[in-house]
Image 1 (tube, rainbow, N blue to C red):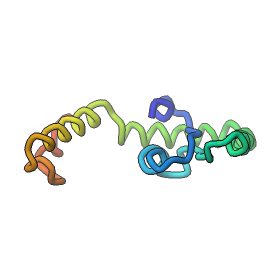
Image 2: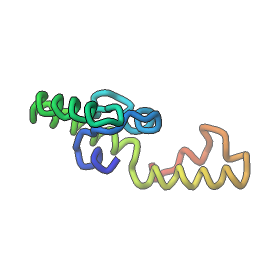
Image 3: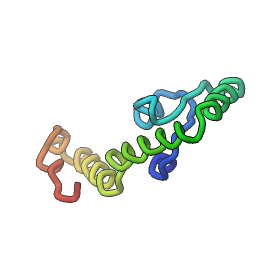
Image 4: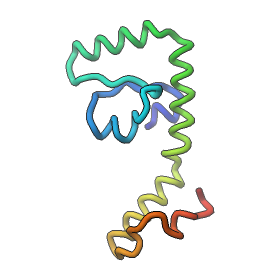
Length: 103
């Protein structure tokens, strides 16, 4: 997430938690199996694509990160999680809580 906020494409190990939450689009970067050979292949691909393509991917990452991982949005999501843990009426989606003026 930090790299995406800085406008940099991401190269990350292909785990479901990363693929399902961070690299939800191939435009945001590269995934590889957790071994040296796969990492080497991805790095060769990165170099082969060149600076212009990496900059394009970086811009897409930054836009995605701004829309999904902003501090206020994350704080509201955690707040909602804790409310839900305390009272199930806050576990439905969408709710009035989602219409916060902070978003």
